[in-house]
Length: 241
Ligand code: ATP
Image 1: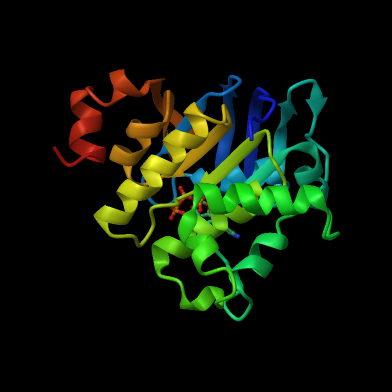
Image 2: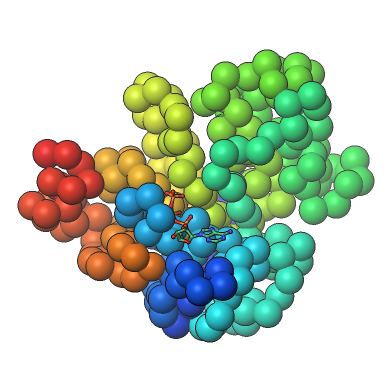
């Protein structure tokens, strides 16, 4: 299930809700097969950044390019066709629908063809528990399993770039460990490019190659995860060490 990698280039991205400037002139690049982490406190502007990349937040400036394509003005519903997968904050699975139906909602085509079957097989290989529970309603899954389902659903469209918003939210340390394993596998085995937004800095440093620390809508610090993870201020503020 190797995917063609693509670089994301974001320049001067700004988001404002009326008078509230949530993101101010943000710039970063995700190289092919690289994971960039964005950490920061509540309200720092992380979710607004991802939503702006998806065309779901009021962008007041800046450009967004994926590979050779300018996606700045591409509407949200067409972003998936351009190769962006999005796992929103809070999972948003359809709890009354069976697991498999939830996965199928992420497929680009609704046709029950060989490609769709192959995509489903890939998700069941990556997340065996989803295969075991494919006919159960999604609401019967645990929080961690629902997070796997949300990731699997985004992967059904075979994205070149995956955007993840706080996948560890509300999960036990054991389940956070499982998410970490899955994300590392996607990066290392599938060469998927990713943007990982998290409040859990330890998880982010464990997956991302490069990290941005956002404060008040701006990049306060950035660098390789290995370096930021050893920075005394970052360790104190974001790792509680
Ligand atoms: P969290 O970790 O709590 O999700 P965050 O870093 O993702 O925080 P954002 O949710 O992007 O931060 O919020 C950035 C700023 O924009 C905050 O001041 C927030 O109150 C404001 N904001 C976010 N969404 C809206 C909205 N729909 N309308 C008005 N203000 C908003």
